[in-house]
Length: 266
Length: 266
Image 1 (tube, chains in turn brown, purple):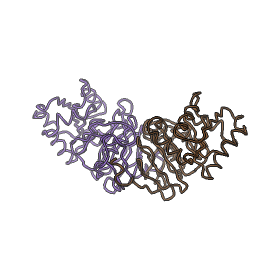
Image 2 (cartoon, rainbow over the protein chains, first blue to last red; image 1 turned 120 degrees about the horizontal axis):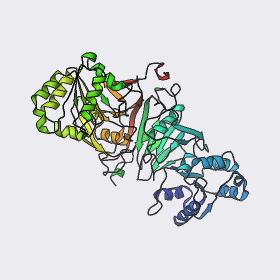
Image 3 (tube, rainbow over the protein chains, first blue to last red; image 1 turned 30 degrees about the horizontal axis):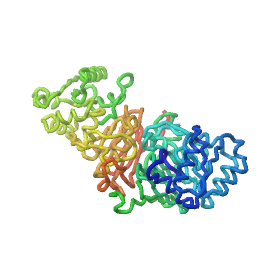
Image 4 (cartoon, chains in turn yellow, cyan; image 1 turned 120 degrees about the vertical axis):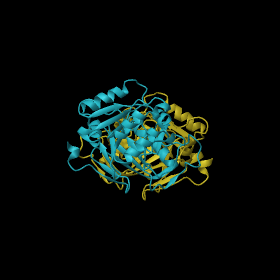
């Protein structure tokens, strides 16, 4: 369940509440990994939030070095968690500290067994096999505008970008997809989440923004292989969907479903 | 020939040079309309530029009030021009001063008879039947994010937005199209032009940026009619093409053609 960043933390806190729901609700044991953040209070902040929302148990696992990844007691927490949540910050802190460690393996294995794994901002980017490490902003794709790095690999069907509307990232998401158009691009606005169910259907959660789906499955042409770094990339036949709360998208058939009638008018 | 703004004015000045070419080359008589701009030197600047590029004659027609629109000697200049060029500034200055006047009619009539009409930035926006008067920026479309106004109506096939990459305008172009998806959206980067030939094929000119084509012809769903102002709009099944110099797009068949092989490698 990747979140676009900056999710509501007071009032309804709809997205975090939904994460708790899919993490077994009142019986939820949440493990929070604040590794992306370099603020000391990020972990305790989410601890408090999930406590208040009614989690049965919350543990913060502040992995700060690769050596931390071997701590048995923290691995046991992950093994028993019903939901694992990665905070925002810098996705390269997560990948450099946890990449290739027993922690990354455990998260992947638990997720494959149905445990909810959520992340916001950097914590969202890390979830897929290929993540955008960084890149320039603006809506036209340019060669080299996105730098990819391996992520946790919970899915290889999607490439995720976050703060999508707020930071104008269509160009870098298109650049990332133009390298190899096999994946579906998921552009997450802030306070908006993509709940991907066990059947690989993505459900849009949160009302503040939208999710932009970039489907390059029937791409006609891309000049990515031949142009110089920094030059604009020619790409044709992209399918684009902008989905709001209540809408869904099937990652197998690549078909969108609009929100149920009436929901928009609320 | 709409230009995305900020076209190169020194060195090669490729786009202005191309405009001169399609305006009869060495025999070109160019009329410059600097009405959008509130800088006093805009007209004389383009006068000098077209002079240096080899125009036979350049006239500046600084329409500043609706009364100016009746000046016979200026109308005669327009009647004899082989190319008419509208500068940047504020498109609402052009539409409020020249809308519904003999000048607007003359420009439309001359263009229908094959005279080149070009415009940069605001001067590009005004060319189509429906123009974006203003709107907010960001890549997610929102209800009310674009305010449309009638333009000069040289074509009703397109809605043009300019400074596209530089000002992050995909959302507002999508909002404009979501009202009524009949038109094709043309997002022009700076120093990039769309030369629309007499057969309604659009050719991308200029190497600095790209043109984003937003085709809503097979739109699946839009929530525009039911949502509140400011709320994100759900839109599905948009076809998107990002076209670079040398590529073209047929506005009838809505098919893109990539740049000729080898051109990208230059």
